[in-house]
Length: 27
Image 1 (spheres, one colour):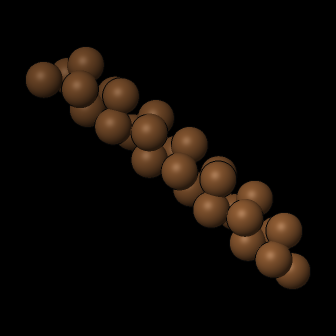
Image 2: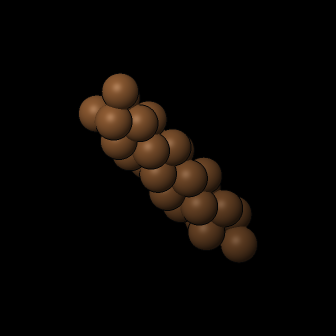
């Protein structure tokens, strides 16, 4: 259960970093 939460948090973190990178490029 905790491992699943860690994996999910990691995926969300990767997604946010990806969105932030795209946003930085458009600026």
